[in-house]
Length: 165
Image (tube, rainbow, N blue to C red; front, side, top):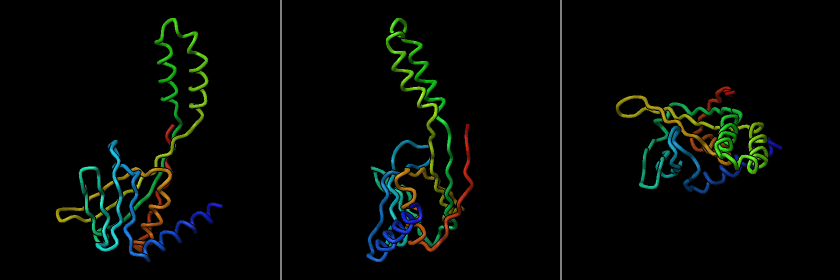
């Protein structure tokens, strides 16, 4: 099933490349920042543009890119569950009313995992080598990797998974 999805994604990205259209991914973030940015693979300029609401943040020609690397990390959501419990503990006399709801929310949250997908772009700028790290959305990371492969003819270096406890 996963192989079929990957083949379909690569075929779709190849069709987009053949048609000469720009490919836009709207759900990414620059790592460490909350605001969303658009990753735009420009067909005519052969470049990667990073745009936010105010305009172009970065314009990277694809021939200046040294390496693309992808990695992901997984962690359990213990801290969020403990925050829900601590909110309930501060509610005073209402604790008896809110405790069942808190247990229904916090206990399943302890057993869920969060995965963060990261794309690192190493490129040469006029001054010095630079690096940009993006946090990709879970619905787009596969499409971004397929687009990189079809647009740049470069392989994406897959970094080993990092697990946080």
